[in-house]
Image (cartoon, rainbow, N blue to C red; front, side, top):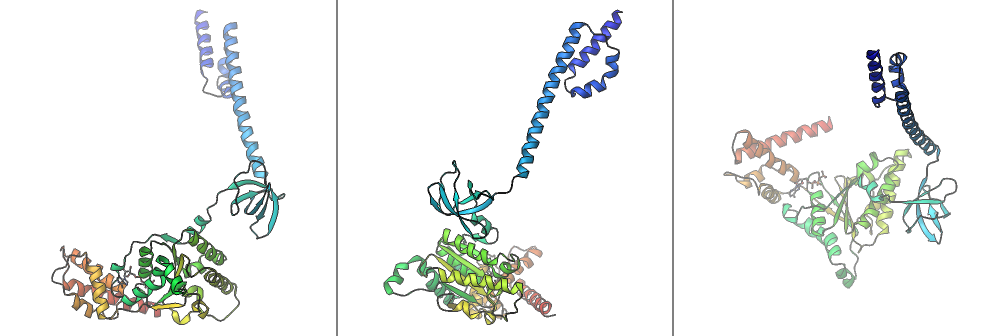
Amino acid sequence: MEKEQTQSKKSAEKLTNNTELPFFSQNISSSDDQNNLVMSPEEEKLFFQTSLRQLHEETAMLRDLFEKASHELSSLKKPALLVSEIVSLHGDKAVIKVPNGNKFYSYVLKGVKDLAPGDSVLVEQKSLNIVEKIVISEASEVEKFVIIDKPRESWDEIGSLKNEIREIKEVIELPLKSPGLFKKVGITPPKGVLLHGPPGTGKTLLAKAVANSTKATFIEVVGSELVQKFIGEGAKLVKDIFELARKKAPTIIFIDEIDALAASRMDTGTSGEREVNRTFMQLLAELDGFESLGNVKVIGATNRIDILDSALIRPGRLDRLIEVGLPDYDGRLEVLKVHTKRMSLREVNLSDVASKTENFSGAEIKAVCTEAGYFAIREGRDAVNSDDFFAAIDKIRVDDEENSVGMIG
Ligand code: ATP
């Protein structure tokens, strides 16, 4: 008898202490035990109190879950809000521009504060009431597509190209640094320049160096990417790029491979063709729309001036053309001096290297220096000699020939 009582007490304790399991599972798992249970009235009371508490807890948890689910359901049922732009404010109303360009006169709900023209707002689809102000950085959208930089390249890092540097300084640097001078003399400087010449001759380098010397923001866009990757977006992107440039001014917009946008072409009327045309038209509109003496300048670069649409280089647009050609012997020697400045050389006659690199571009000369360094490293030396340079020249020349055969064949 005594043994039975102790056993039932133990079972009751086990049940009451087992608070980790949910109530129902406790009941199921312990139903056999309960059949054999004989509890005193106190134990029974304790048991039911505990069960009741657990039931309360479980109910609260389920109610919480239910509320969350029904909240989520009602959010899912709500129509999406439109993102619009404030055009002008009129007391508790505002003119807004919705994404398709239409304008509406809408109510601003109470609690929506600090609105200003140009702000992005959320509006209800049906009533077009303004319900919330949001911060969308237009710039960050564009920033995904372009490279924005404060370049560190300086004029000393450019070998030869003396005339090209002088011209770019006159057209880009001087108007940005001393606009007053142009006003005094009474002339308007070009809005931008077009650098043209073979690949690797230093066009990008020139653009970056002028951005550095004017402490301008450098926005780099590649024409072919603009038309290939962002189909349907090209024109808007061009507009946004110029807007971003104005915000971050002084700015230099560098459009590499501008021929991809501005090639004169037969109008085939395909949708791709129309898209490129729209992008190009937007570029022209932007070029026409800004001041020569403003603090945004455009530098275009191309290897294919022969196919360029003449509309781009009309007066008032990129009407200053700067040819950046392959360096001659003196030019190559200067480029070599730039790229060997920090190299440790042993008995290297740079004039010989310059003579043997005829028709090499600046980029190829740089590649020769790097390859020469690798030849030395491979042989366990810490200085580069003439033979390394000659081996490097042969290697780059062969690589080039293979590349050009690859392109033709
Ligand atoms: P692409 O038409 O292919 O875009 P690019 O004319 O813009 O070529 P860059 O990108 O400016 O050529 O040059 C590539 C690299 O070659 C530069 O980063 C630089 O290291 C080297 N380089 C080219 N020209 C010169 C130069 N005149 N002086 C020193 N380095 C040069």
